[in-house]
Length: 340
Ligand code: CP
Image (tube, rainbow, N blue to C red; front, side):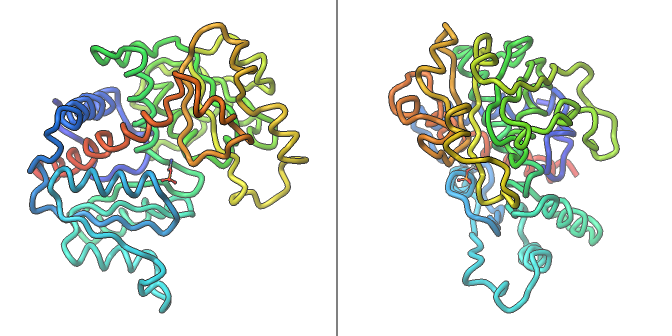
């Protein structure tokens, strides 16, 4: 495995193919360990990992904490409601306080974009060795979800020997509330890095036309894109049309809590056009995999019959794969620290 070049993991926009491959290979190794019974290893013994979730989470928070425990790290959770936030302490001072306690890694989720980045800059400015791992920030980025989705898809298409190149020229359909989705943004970086062609499907209020230029217009930390040739991005307003020739579908949650304006005439009309049902899926004649990052709104963006009965619905696999993926990320950040 190559040296790991990132002190912080804040976005996938600066990931090279080698970076993705390091994560995927380690995820596969940790996944094998988890399934063969050797669940706990001493790799991060003595490391202090703090999970600081300023915004609610079930999957990400618990799987990061389980991942840290499986690597034998000391894990501390921050609970906003019983913290000094109620006395006016800021998110930045909260993070700096944990860094001063000797945290090796801060896992941070926040409802505003770029807060983990701000915290990482502040830590770097004070020569702190603490790493920041973005667990989802506003509309910006959810790198661990993008990576576990990447692993889940590659594992589906190449179950015996993991081959990331298998995604080259595959058509991956992402349907739903793209504008509010940090997951979709991370999916776009990861999938196009391996040559997948992505179709974004939904109404114009949830997928503005500008998304077609997402990869070219996003600032990649003012550095050149480390991926030389990416797959394409297209926009479709018709689920019926776009599902026909897709090789996989990622369904997104309708994020009502982030909708400041009235972006839909009604939830019902949205569901009539964009809810993934068995009838809609049958337009595609292959048994394609269906993913959803969760939490799901049953009957709004995805039918219960897909979730509970369709054999290639991979939602539970995504949740399971979240643990080895996050073990890989924690391991790589600790490896970075040993390199310096
Ligand atoms: N997918 C995801 O981020 O889920 P949680 O909000 O439950 O962490």
